[in-house]
Length: 355
Image (cartoon, rainbow, N blue to C red; front, side):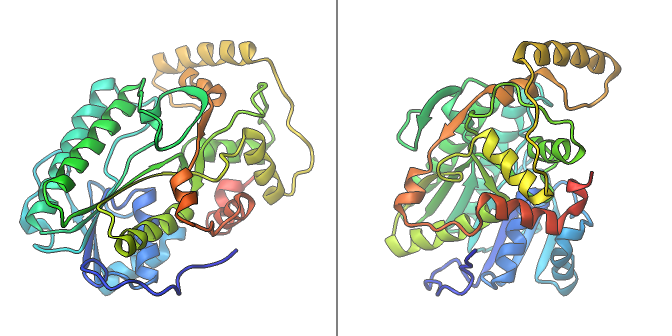
């Protein structure tokens, strides 16, 4: 594993100033703050979110920075207009991670009522604070469902409310950049982002393997675009530096391991970290879906959250073969292999790998 923290940073109007991270106390926001604080690239970072930072063990440096004043938490809701008094009147860079994204978990309209006003209000603050750099994490969901490989030149065809809302939010950010040629915009479309604090499908996969109840459903070769959260932070820094170096007003990059790993690749990497040598069993897909529908119906009535929801099960079979072509062409070198990513995750959050 190599590290890029010592690379020289181009002089600019963003580094060395204040930065604001909207959605700053979520998984991606927390890791992003720790990444840039560790490298001293911003004078101060503001975490703007509905919820205060959680006292996670893996986020210890975050809380140390809060106490020292290098990091500031500001409670706000991006669905409401952002008051200029809540955040610095001028800032160098803005990161927008604020969104709702769980599927299942929200009604279709909720994605639009949060993700679109959030984009508009963040862009309005960017204008008011004279920010010249905005980085927005979108999603691969605007590509829609298909087994065919896709890259950044593939026309979007979202088939979920979440995907439609993220594509619309991309257009709002793009309009902000186009309104002033001195502004710069990075849009990243990551696959599934995993690591400490994720608490979603990849965490469920890790725990099911650790506890020994994971089974294949004939989906071993299904490709699932994904990226380790710390790798995503490295990509963010690389994108900002590349944009400064090449004077590019807009970048749109997919972000995944290259090529996108298969389910079997993920399982093999996790098992290697766990020290497991036996291969999981495989059961028919129809049987799994029948169980998921029965369990899901009961849990919906009882309002119980559990991992065997039909929507989640269908995601296991749905390929997301999203190529990170532009990231590859930009010369990016990955900092973590897939196995190294899970090993690093286990080192910072061993409770997720407990048997």
